Length: 263
Length: 157
Image (cartoon, rainbow over all chains, first blue to last red; front, side):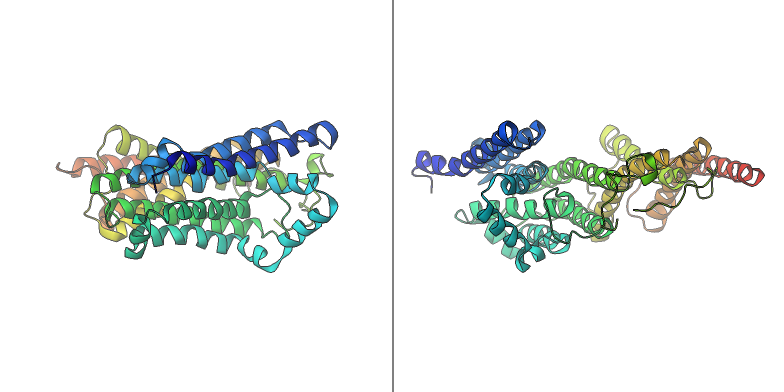
């Protein structure tokens, strides 16, 4: 798989370049001719694409094939940090605004379709996210999957997509039909965070098959505290949404506090 | 969200800053425990291999709960302020009750009853346990004194 690193690397860069170009182009057009688009979202998107790319290409991605600590760092970047930044950049909103009418209607129909609605509910998204981590790091099957060179990029794509789905289900700003209540989302968020912390301890105590003990321990500690750092931002973003949403109507901003959904 | 009309500010009962501060007290005490004893002193370990799977599970769970109550506590306190339901005595009472309650819970239930981990290893534990729990009790009692005083103030006026 490493015979033509140049060609492979170039092919792997392409999706990230495209994601960056499409978003920034659409955002720029919104800023100049449309309703405007906040600069901080453009920066968030750029950071998110950068984090995701660092998990696939470059030195960290290279050593992630052989070193468990690097693999764990790539997991944190791909599965947690990148999704957080990408979700906060509200790409679906931007897409809906900048598309022609017909494709925009198709996209919003797709978002309302049953499978998408199911997967973007926080409970299935959390199970998909935390469940696959437990499968990978705490079972013999998972150890076999991890050791497979060809599967590695697929696992990383899964980290990124599952991470995005989960983060969007908790703090997504994009239009979501039937977004669950704050209470439901809080319970799912708490369960997923707990699952991550407990798994990090398990990885430390019971190294996955084929992973040297010192790497498993360092990887477990990195997963624990690195996960904390991202979780802290996620929790603050979630609570800040609740705070804005529950603004008392008496505080003089009646116009802002009129959504029909229940907190 | 139609909020009921904000009642006259209470010093303790019905005061939103009281439960919020309890959460902050728990979160801060847990963070101090983590930073001082794990990171600075190195008396506690990430995993000591002795407490088994229950220890792993409860450690991970407790750690997540700490992070959540800390963030949620600060947002609830901010919410109390904007609803004009913030009271300094109630906030201090809650903070001390939360911090002392956590310290004592950790010292008695985690260390002694469940024996998940100890304060320090390879030493005579008695002075450590005493210092730990007496400190927790002091925090808890000061919180209770403040809470009683605030409740009395409530009744008076």
